[in-house]
Length: 374
Image (cartoon, rainbow, N blue to C red; front, side, top):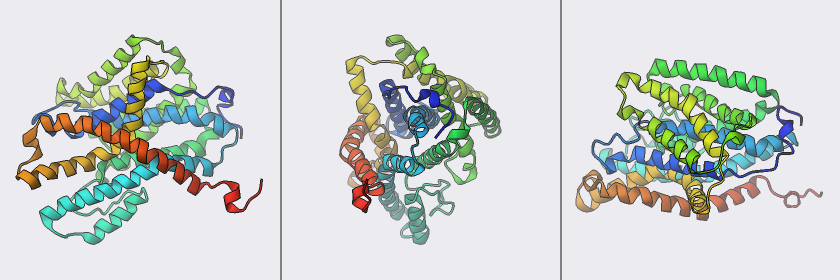
């Protein structure tokens, strides 16, 4: 198959360990953003933590281009690509959805009794098929009400498939035009809504397509332009990248509300690409490389499991002591957040990796297993 980046065919595969670190840090920030009430009652820490989703999309674009440009140019089939992406994304997605169904179901039952059972089952089946539910049970706006973080995985899979289908048509010129057009759309959308916290619910579902299109294909462009080669090793790029990330994700703490969307747009359109360029070319020293492997490996589990697990954790002191978990802050948060790293790492090693291998074999069995001889 000929295509836009055949020049990369001879480029050797490369693992971007510093991006593992960045992805792991971002997953922890999302976790902290959602459980701030376990740390401080009036915490505004990482008030723009939802922007980490845009960072995930951009990282995904970079890594998908780095991993698959050469393979697609050499003739990778859509079936194989689809199997690879489903094997990576679906097992934990399904497990987290079922866990969330149990957690949210028990939570709602304790509040209201058995209501909207039919809608709950229909929504569960739709969500397990990675389909948003526009008729969710209870009074919620989320398209994935049993695990709020799941909405971004729907968009992740969608944009991955679009990437493959449009690959041969997205030469550098068209790619840059797509990034520019989607950046203009993103800016207009942000100004119109006064936020980029969009795509997760019924009122703003369509905006999620703009959000993922810009960030993902910006990541693809960063890789294809070779910007990672501009980075220099050493502690300065790491410190600069993480400092920039921290500043932008806490910008709302220091800016008036009317300026918050400007912070969002600056972060996504300008700062996140710089952060990825700074981090992508780095070789980490051994202790930091080990941390990067742990956090990077645990990141997907941290991201998808923290919401149902915090619901479960919140119910325990209510059931045992008739007290809200927030009354145990900040100790509850200081236990929960590091605990999520442990849970995430164990889930990655004992569930994600084996499930990925098994699903890949099941969806794409060896030729001998289906009666075809080579």
